[in-house]
Amino acid sequence: MLKEDLVKVFEDSFKLNWDKPCFSDYGSEPSTFGEIANKIKELHEIFKSLDIKKGDKIALCGKNSANWAVIYLATVTYGAVIVPLLSDFTAEEIHHLVNHSDSKLFFASELIIEKLDFAQFPEIEAVFKLEDMSVIFSKEENLNEKVAGIIENFVKTHTVTKETLAFEIPAKTDLATIVYTSGTTGFSKGVMISHNCLMANIQYAVDALPKGGDAMVSFLPLAHCFGCAFDFLLQVARGLHIIFMSKTPTPKVLIKAFGEFQPFLVISVPLILEKIYTSKIRPLLETRKMRILMAIPGIRQIIMKKIGKGISDFFGGKCYEVISGGAAFNPKIESFLLKAGVRFTSGYGMTECAPLIAYTDYADNRKTGSCGKIMTYLTAKIDNPDKKGIGEICVKGENIMSGYYKMEKETAEVIDSEGWLHTGDLGRIDKDGFLFICGRLKNMILSSSGQNIYPEEIELKVNYMPFVSESLVLDGGKGRLVAFVYPDHDKMKAENVTEEQLAGIMQQNRDEVNETLPAYAKISEIRIHPEEFQKTSTKKIRRTLYTHLVAQKKGSKKQ
Image 1 (cartoon, rainbow, N blue to C red):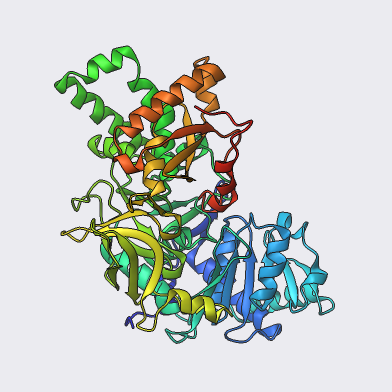
Image 2 (image 1 turned 90 degrees about the horizontal axis):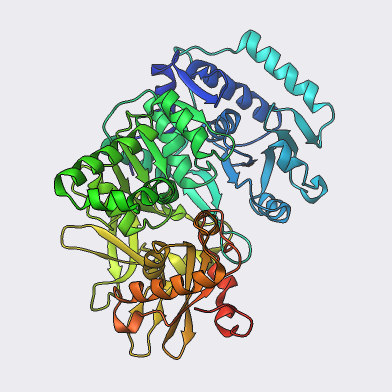
C-alpha cells in the first residue's frame, strides 16, 4: 500500500491553494479552492440529513462541469462511493446501472433527467439536478426546503477555513468508485476501484511529470477513468485551475480555450492529433510545390520545424506535453509528428487499473509505436508469448481493481489465483522495457498457415490511405482477409472523386498496404461500407456487430 492517502492529499491541496482558482465551466468565473471546499462540506451535511452512510453509493451522470467535479469530490471525501455514468448511455442502461450499483442518491443533468422514469429506481432516495443541485424527485416531502435550510445553516455556523478544514480519512482499501465500462455487448461491468488505486495513478503522475502551469483545459469525459484521473483528480492534487468544457469542443473552440489558458499539459486521444494532421497538414504536403520543397533536406527541416511550432501554438504555445491515450496511434502520423518536434507521448491503460499501465515522457527516448514503460506501481508479464514475443499482457500491483461489482465469476475470469490481471490485450515488451500493443486477444485471427494476425495493426495502415475515414478488417474465411472501408466523403467532395473513381483508388490502396504486409496477412479485398461504424463510448468499433458482413457479397460494393 502507498503511504499517501487520497483524501488527505485533496485536503492538503485545498489548504495550500485556498485562494487560488479551482474549478470553472468554460466562459464562467472560477470558484476558488476555498469556495469549493465549502461546497463539498455543504454536500456532506446534505448527505448526513439523508442518512447516507460510509460506503453508500451515489450515482452521477452528466457532461463535464464544475458541479460534476464537486459532487465527485464530496462523495469520495465523505467516504461514500461515487458511481459516474456516461452521459451517452441510453435510458435503459442508466436505469439498469443505477439499480445494479445500489445507489441511494442520483445527481443527473437536466437532459438526462428528461428521459428517465423515476418509478424504475426503487432504491433511490432522491434525484438532484446537476445544474443547480435542486431536488427533482424525493421519497421525502419538502426536501428542497430542507436542503435550502441546511445550506443556510451551514453558511451561518459551519463555514470552514483553511485552518479548520478536515476530512475523515477512509481506509486505503475502501471502495472509492464503481466505474461502468462501455462494453460491446450487453450491459457494462462495474469496475470497483479503491482509494489506493486512484492514489497510485495520481502519485505516479506527480512523480513522473515536471511541475508547472496554472491551468488545465478538461475536455475528455470525466466518467471515463482516463479523463477523471488526469484531467481532474491529478490537477486537484497539483492545485491547478481546471476549466471544464461541458460540450464536445470543436477545434475552433479548443484553439480559443488553449490560447486563453495556455495549459502546461494536455490530456487527449489520438483522434485530435490525427485530425490536425489529416485535415491541415497532409493536404498541404500533397501539393506539387510542397513535395518539391520537402525533397530538399535543408528546406524540409525548416518546414518540419514550422509545422511543429504550428501544432504547439494550437495547444496554447506553453504546453510541455500532449499525452495521448484510449486508442492506438497511427504509426505513420506518429512518426511524422515526432520528426516535426511535436511534444507528445502515448500511454496505455484500462478501467480495471484506474487506468494507467504504461507511460513514458516524450523526452525520455520513447520509441515510435510504443506506449511507454510499465508504471512504477505495477509488474507486468507477457503470457504465453509466440515466436515474436507477442502474448497477452498481464499486470499486478497497487492499482488493480478490487473486482467487478456483484460479478464474482467475471472477476475470477480476469484476475487469476496469483493476482495477475489478464488485460485481454496482446503485446510485447522489448529489451529496453518498452511496451508495444498489437491488438485484442479476442480479435486475433489465426491464418490458414497457423500465423497470428492482428487486425488492428492492418487497420492502422488502411486508415492512413487516401480517402479512407475508418476501416474494419475481418476474417473472410479460407485464408482471406476483408477490409471494410467507410470513405472520407468530405475529401471526395472536395476533390470531385466519384464512386467509380473511388473503386480504383481503393484497389490501389489495397496494393500499397499489401506491400507492407507478410503473405499470410495480405488483404484479399476492400469493400465500401455505407456508413460510419458503430462505436463504444471510448470510440472503439463494435466489431461483433459486423462479423456477418463477410458473408454478404451480393449487393455489396467491392473493390
